[in-house]
Image (tube, rainbow, N blue to C red; front, side, top):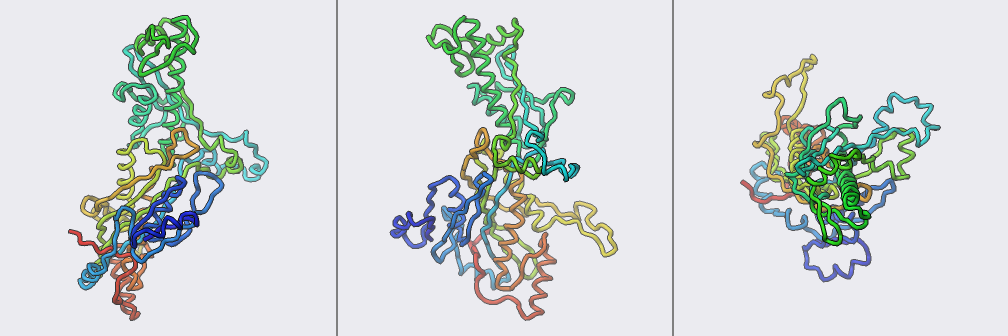
Length: 462
């Protein structure tokens, strides 16, 4: 397969071997377009580019074979046909996700707003909640940081310790991260809207910058020199003439005898959209504001058993871009966990009721949850397109997986059952619904036809 972005690249494509995939990334935003094209999509991909003004990238996929970059997906029609004879329908259809993140907070109370007052509302009336982070150098030369926003397992403390260690040139285990008390913590938006990686990382960078500046000032005062004659480096402040150095512990001791407390700093990171004029109108009108847009392309390979209605996920391939990946383990964990939740939503989780309105899903025996039994191998790949609007280039990504996995799985089921005319038109697409749709088609004389549905994978799997 060949991927073409524009006329300027056509000369580069003429000598490509048949069936090969070419990824060209003249701009960071083209990464998704490349994978979409290589996955066989013939479409226009709408890319927010993390800005209110959007642009379009035309993607043309040339070639007869379905192929994902790095050879992740290939078409094996013979194997698909063999499985078809056994009543097993395999299929895959790539789908795209755009995940807005880091929502503005001023619009959250818009339902309590006087609508008639919105047209005359000033930008100065907007009440936005920043992120706060308190930091201090302790007597033993360690760094103590305290968050104002609690976590529900996203790794806030890990991110802060990691970034502060980078900013201050110390080890992550020299940074202790805790939480401020509810009486002293300022009002916060909270953990929601895929915003904490962006907001906390921004606050951590600002805190590191402020501490470095304060410590240089403190050292210059001790040595009676200009601030320009000193420099913070790797856990201490050096005189540029190399005549002396003060460690973090020594700086904390100096500060303890003074009254300025330069070794204790509160950093404030404002919501990034507040500095973007294009969002002003949305802020004034209390409309949702999302300054980042993570994106992904998914390709789950499914096998549908026409006799039982069971849908088995063989492998879930996903390429994701959340800007700067601050901590790969956390991002992969959130991705896999979100996809697992999406599998539950697509295939099994449902609050069922009788015709009389009585709940039928009253226990976890009735309300099925995804587990190791039905969550397949998840192959995760990343590209990094840093956001131009956030301090670290990070984008919100906490809600990904749960958002896109259900639609991606349904699309692959549709590809697998294309020859039958059955469509996954209701989620979860449980076995009884699969069988009912197949029986309806058989009753209409529109049962399974010969041939391979578009997008089948067909690779032999255990």
